[in-house]
Image 1 (cartoon, rainbow, N blue to C red):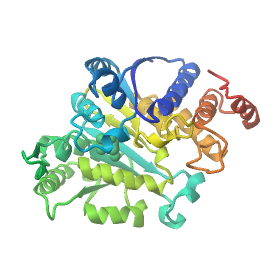
Image 2 (cartoon, rainbow, N blue to C red; image 1 turned 180 degrees about the vertical axis):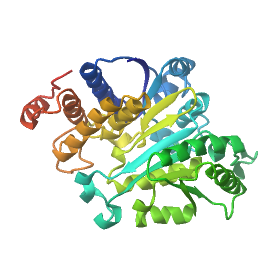
Image 3 (cartoon, rainbow, N blue to C red; image 1 turned 45 degrees about the vertical axis):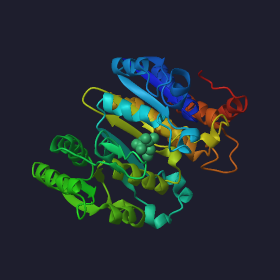
Image 4 (cartoon, helix red, strand yellow; image 1 turned 30 degrees about the vertical axis):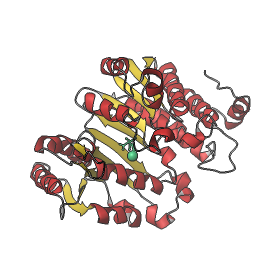
Length: 372
Ligand code: IPM
Ligand code: MN
């Protein structure tokens, strides 16, 4: 298959982790005879620095023309610590989501059996966790009208949703539930918010056309508690933009590291794949960031194009790195492996799943991948 991929490395550890995902995709190309073309563009703080705009026109054009976008990370402490900053890196990501119409953000939360001891939560609580969050991505409080009075003393952000915005993602979530364990939980705050009451109404109505899917509703405060008390009760979670942002970071704790969670953002025309972790500026350039979330985002990219065998090869290679302890320090504080070495190991094992650990170890110690 020929695919054009736009690469947006962005800020912080984005470039380092994205490089590992590309290595793995090149291993997939080699092994399964595909032809992917990669073109890189600026986004985020680095784009502000170089072009004065977190989403330069050339970047947007490249993304619109590409079959898919692979994204690194965005954000810089310089802007986080300056509430008066008019221009922010995150605006680049938000504008990209809006411009590409990426209304559904899909975030799977699973336990890797070999990492069960990495979670701060007890084993018997997290065993069997396997749910997917469908987070609405182009509406709600993120995109509603923002106001600040002239004195700078009163501010507001509007949370607005239309029936259409709710129903298009609801259909995707119901379909996903049908292919999984037939359960859908809508997370909202319908006891307080009018917008949540609209979500409930619309989702309940759509639920009638998916009779096999058991639909339930949870208030977001209760949901925040349930996710760490009893995560295996969930199958597909559907929620609005802001609640989904918060709940998905919470979900990442279950697996032991936010460095493992991948995501896909899809719309009717475009798709983008990114790790859910942020730019992690403290780790930038230190070769310690976990590349697995980025590599698993590449697996989601492959699945999006129905390259299931290829995606499985990536997932199995990731599983092997976890099993063999070829992991970054977030998963094992005493680990001697860095971002690059973990990426090399996974890429090598996509090419040759029988690759022997010792042979790889030698190459890893030499800082060389056997394929690149
Ligand atoms: C995410 C991030 C973004 C969000 C930020 C960087 C704007 O936290 O993708 O979850 O809030 O959506
Ligand atoms: Mn977030």
